[in-house]
Amino acid sequence: MTDERAPTTTSFSFHYSESEDRIALHAPTDGDETVVWLTRRMTTGLLVALATLIARSNPNALRTPEHAAEILGFEHQNALVIASGGQGVRLQASRLPKKLPLRLVEQIELTALTNGRGRIALRAGDSRLSLELPRENLHLLHDQVAGLAKHARWNLELGEPWPASPATGDSQPRVTH
Image (cartoon, rainbow, N blue to C red):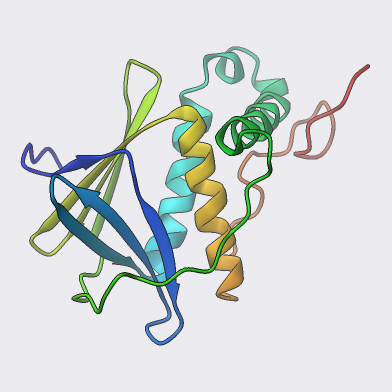
């Protein structure tokens, strides 16, 4: 999707609607508000695509695939610490600002940009939205969406976002002193 008219934003919030059993992505853009809704299926696709984008755009993980899980695990933990200012990131209950039209996301396209950022383009009917985020925020986005899906009790069968490494046998980063 290369629609240049899609508003680009770096600010967004997610909300889980129990009555709709969907996740709303709320993004203020140029004096307007765009809200699109993610179903379980699209949320699963977004999480898998985000993990793939993060893994395939890390040059260190690509150079040493036998240590990719550790590298990506460290990067993920570090990104969450940076994004939270060291305070830890927690989901917070919030409400959407008003009753909004139900625009279901139909297409998601992720692109790794040359400046270390990632672009997530969403299409929901006539609505288009583009999020351009640094790597740290891609990790935060993955973490927050996965947390909302868990909160919704969707039990998505995703496995670990970073494949197990033969070096450690699991996907948890090793701590060395």
